[in-house]
Image 1 (cartoon, rainbow, N blue to C red):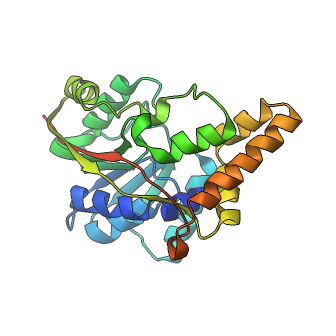
Image 2: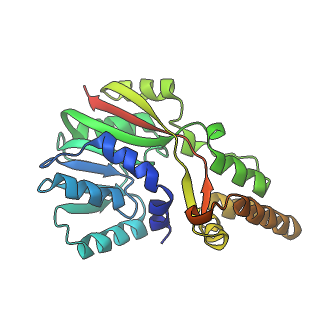
Length: 252
């Protein structure tokens, strides 16, 4: 499943999020954009017997998260198919909200973070992983170049400007806002074939190829194959540089 491939892609980033969150025994945790639930289950093990709720807008991801959680016997972890921007969370319920690249796509980020703040206890914590600016992320620059497209969607990088994001969070009611640089690679697969399959699962790749004439699409696919092959790094597989922020804050 594509959501689980992201778990492998972001395995080193995950270490930074766990450390920044510092989930403690007995805490209540909200995981925003939880995907297949890897970060939710990790929080569940750290918080037990505290409760963890994962939310995502993808029904297949939530279904898979429930399957994996049941298989691991974690009875303190639950999931809801929900948009964190508008979902009626119980007020002041959670000690911490976490997210691994799940908060950059809100239609109204100010409303979304205000809604998340309301779900946190007084002085509740926030720990987010977000991408830095596009130009600092090799994975998107090189894949876009291979496909021969000019990117027209900056939403994955919408929280990459620390000053703008700090103002956004302050308006939503957060204080003590801090940014920590995360300089880790992303892993696209153990070999070029697996990496190609992964990249073909990106909506942006599908759209880019669909907008090209057949001959141009074939050339783009060859360039993509060559780009991925150039990033094959032995036992690590296909690897690209990336830059992210850990954003930490607390409800004021």
